[in-house]
Length: 296
Figure (tube, rainbow, N blue to C red):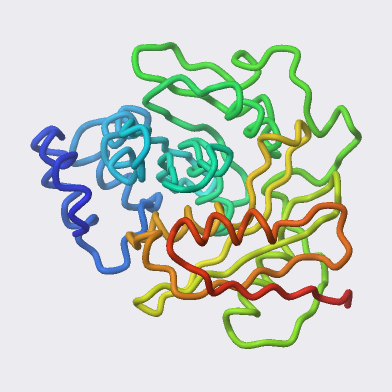
């Protein structure tokens, strides 16, 4: 079991701690519970799914990477598959504040990058900020997404974001988490092909500046991330941050990246390369390759 869970685990009720410890200790645990595992946890703790999500928030928050604020936020997204996806905020010393990741963005991206296609609700230990509310409005579940906060009545994203502006106002029909394939091709090794697959599923309906990245850590593990564009532009999540979310949820350190490959559409109206290189350099990685693919 990853040591980051030790303190949070000790704070859980005895029955939940004993039930969840074997799951956290599994070699393939990546900060997510299947529908079957959730059902078992509910049976063993006599909690319903929402009570369980609240009870598990300390574990999600334990995944936070916060060298700047030391303020950990945890989120748990529930997919249509019935799976729980952890998310946590991330900050990067030496990079700009704009490169940080919010817990809600993390949980959403964790689910999306793992193949979930619809989110039903999200449970957070602190009220979502305006940035996150706008980010979540890009989802295909939109303003119907359920928002659950400790001590509050259940609500929808629409109630937290009244008179919302989003993709539907711009006649965008392909929404975040909808399956897409941009049919780009590149030559290259396994890491380049992983970055290509991430670029081909990126969500960029406003600029068509499709991009994706793949990271290889010192342990040899590889993680990818896709660009997630937003109707309000600023809440857009760069591909590097998406990959860092996946790396972090798998228990790897952002300070142990050995190599990165960025794939982005040639001659696009925006470029990820400079910001990606700067953030990677702040994390101690200066080995970034950039590939511009051709269309199929």
